[in-house]
Length: 265
Ligand code: KIV
Ligand code: NA
Image 1 (cartoon, helix red, strand yellow):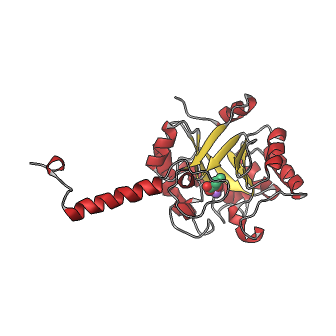
Image 2: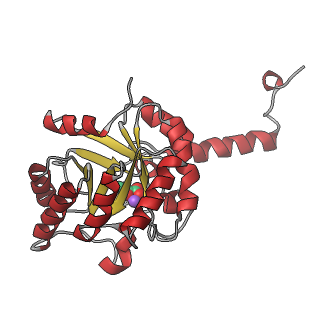
Image 3: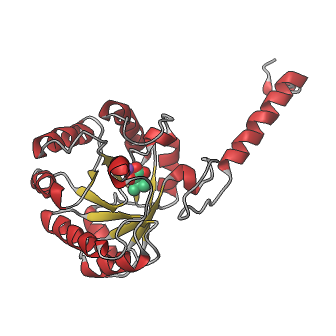
């Protein structure tokens, strides 16, 4: 199988075929999702919460995300790997966005980057696109702006929906190859999906987007804490791992492991 390219995602949209995206932060998960046929893997800044244990995505740095990008690139044989630009690594200027993205592509081996924000980041998206960096945009609830947005809230309700449509259109014109829509009313996401040539990727944005993304630890039930409404756990990996660790502990304490079968004569 050949590497997924950004034009393949455009072709899927033209054919009306939906596709899935997951986050990945390490080699095993990347290998497994790749084998499962997930065409796009995002090394999200959600690694802040899901790998590093921070409260939110704000503290995570390029240096913390870089090793995760490298690991996912090594594990993903065919998936397109997108590196998320963390808070403070692209907002300052197009030059800063270029420098950060070049690092993720040169050192990390990423195939594309993602950044949060609307029309105000058109200069960044244009500069990146012109320099050979494919850009995934991210609109709606943008976690890096949690404090400005006043917490986890649906974005684009009522009159604010029009603004979202406008932002999506200008980001497309600036060269973005896709746009994530997070916590957006389903009817607004449907309208944006219909108006754009580039694919929309929903997370809490209803069923009409071209693609859907979830944080893998939410998707597989590895994260056993509170989950937003849009999360559907497809497994109880946290429970499975808890059980495995408990049984290992019990067998070591009880002397059942290792037995002859797992020892050398
Ligand atoms: O960091 C992340 O996981 C994301 C996705 C949820 C889109 O930005
Ligand atoms: Na993110």
